[in-house]
Image (cartoon, rainbow, N blue to C red; front, top):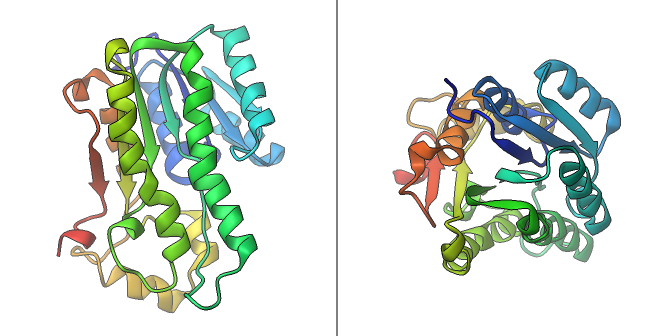
Length: 244
């Protein structure tokens, strides 16, 4: 018997990395999963990799029209939602003094504004007793030079989780933040050269990047009844980087 048998889960940004690993695990644990991605080709490939009990909906989490289309699809195909993992996000380095208006608007638009409306627009479909989790970043806990826009756009989630759980308490909907650290993904490979990767690895006590499946298992914990008494919390899965 799976931990998510009969559940309907929505995962934004679910075509690569941690979220794709989570989608695969959620399906293995009995859920039907809706995933989103901006690029149709990548979305089709992710659906193929997951293999069953998955629906791909092309869209950008920063677009309110695309979010409406996502939830219209969920309503038509399944009728309700039990788990929402608002995982779509991104960032780029820019030190103070060189930050552009476009960079601020892009990353706050996706990581903050996009996450807020991903959650808000899901609520009419949410079953009581469901679970919402948002992907944070340990950049919001550390002081990594050059990453202030990204860190700021992720830090809002911790406040939202606390406020939203209070607003949703009568429906027993839990809201938590999953905060990964440095994880070996294709996107990270695009952002980090070899020297930068070694620098970040040196901050992790075990000296190795996290794996997408290690974040997926943490997401499963927050999505399932295993975390039924966990609410408004930030689960940091960064190998101890920000603890020392």
